[in-house]
Amino acid sequence: MAIELDHTIVPAKDKTAAAEFFAEIFGLKVNHGHFAEVQINEHLTFDFADEPELWGGPGFDPGTGQSHHYAFHVSEAEYEAIFARVEAKGIAYGSGPFSHKDKRIYRRRGGRGFYFEDPNGHLLEVMTVPETRS
Image (cartoon, rainbow, N blue to C red; front, side, top):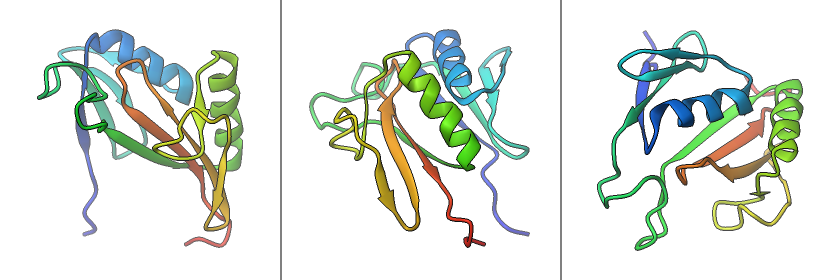
């Protein structure tokens, strides 16, 4: 059996707001319970929790410049829909982890992608998969 990630806890200042933002941008739904759970695919959920970061705040650590980074391979149609929602909300996006507000997309490995921050400072990356990838 291949190893598959089942779920991960995503720390948030407000788990419900964070899950709803993520679900809206990615076109998904939130299941409310102990965690605000978003089903990413048939095998993976993001379980948003009201938990502070180890450094004491949500997301981006101003002392180290680090944050949680979540990267997603998506189809061309999903990419276009996600990118349109990001632009419609006026969310800054960019071509790299340290240039995630330069309003550019990147092209590499036959695909394209972009980065943006969620309200907790987590860095999200959306990238297409080349058709020839298996």
